[in-house]
Image (cartoon, rainbow, N blue to C red; front, side, top):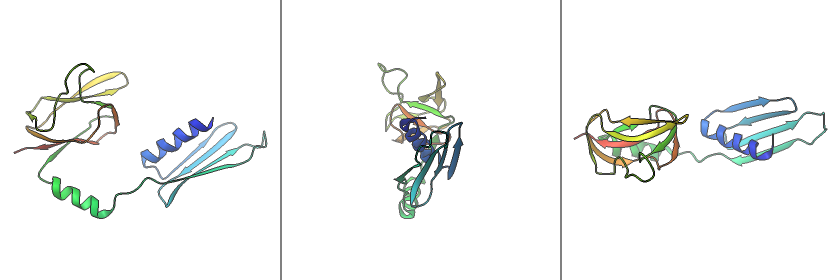
Length: 157
């Protein structure tokens, strides 16, 4: 396992929200802990090659303050959030040369396609389950999305 793979593993664990991950392979042990003041990764090479122990620390992702978290729901309480039903890559267009499915201000009705999410080489059309007007697009085009991640804010009135 090279340093680039270890760095990618650190980024993945930080985004996943896990507090600790341990990985043991034939000649290497990795422990990644997150959630405190910093993110700590300890990599130990087994004594077979008598390599030194490498320790890597990087700052944890900034956490939104309670004031910011409290303010957002108050502003958006009248809106309905459309969330991702699957993990994948979010696309606003059916293909690169086509226009986006919806823009801010677009009136939508139940069954309208809002976006596609690519998962395992399959493009899944995400349809609206409500009628209303798109108020905000919460995800950038071609971005990875998680299950239940907010995608759009809709004003149902």
